[in-house]
Image (cartoon, rainbow, N blue to C red; front, side):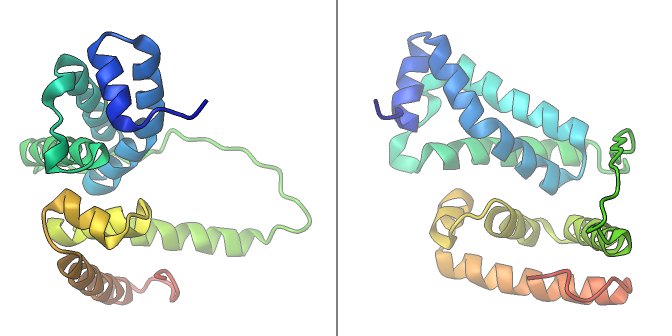
Amino acid sequence: MAEPDDQQLLRQLARGNESAFATFYERYQGRLYRFALHMGGNSATAEEVTQEVFMIVIANPKGYNPAKGSVAGYLFGISRNLTRRSMAQHQNCLPILDEDIDVVAEPSEDLDLLAELSHAESLECLRKAVLTLPEQYREVVVLCELEEMTYPEAGALLDCSPGTIASRLHRARAMLKAKLKGQGCAKGCLP
């Protein structure tokens, strides 16, 4: 049996179908969390935003209007607005770093630990640089580069043309390269 599409899941959810909600949640939770995390840089806020998106959907499953775009666009739009609101409320707060993650891995013979450390440092440098971008540029980097959306998909979500998305992404990449060079980060962080 084919998996139900997003609109079918919303209709089932509106009728109180818990398994439809579980499928819907599983389909979007990770993507919404990553979006909020990359936009706000704070894992606690990302968790709150993700939970609130699903609470909004549960409270008003008929709030989605197919004439205005895809279900994904609807959910990312809610996440975008909630993340913006949270960032505005906590404008003077520093992002919380995930320092409590203790991964103990045994080195293998094939693993070059120095290269791995250099890669991890480059990724952290890139993550910090993305967080400093103006919101309109950060959004396109998160959607197109991290969430791998196409320009038309990102354009529908952000209510602008695919050409505008391409232009913003080009500008965002240039800004990131300049920021990374200015910070002395390793070459090759960007695709």
